[in-house]
Length: 116
Image 1 (cartoon, rainbow, N blue to C red):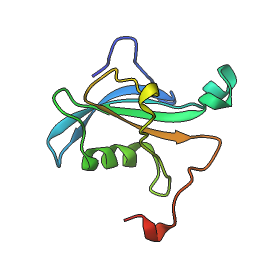
Image 2 (cartoon, helix red, strand yellow):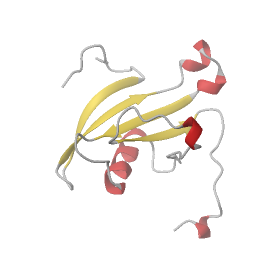
Image 3 (tube, rainbow, N blue to C red):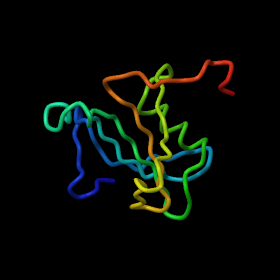
């Protein structure tokens, strides 16, 4: 399904998709964009890959978010969800979660034995 104004073609670094998740039986609404062009237009602070995932009636669960991560990033890449300070919180869609990956630096992580 194409969304007017968000159509993409092969090679674009953005898009809007309805992705079926057979395990949970839902169609995930996904918007993806890469910050590769932002480095030229807005500077390095905006050089982030970003994927938002939403459903019409509930927040996506861990299994669904992990599935989307596996589509847009390699198994050996780390991406994150952010819990920003309340003063910086913006909620434009009540059933939407986001995945982020900075393009210019590595995400710091605790030692692997601490991550279960």
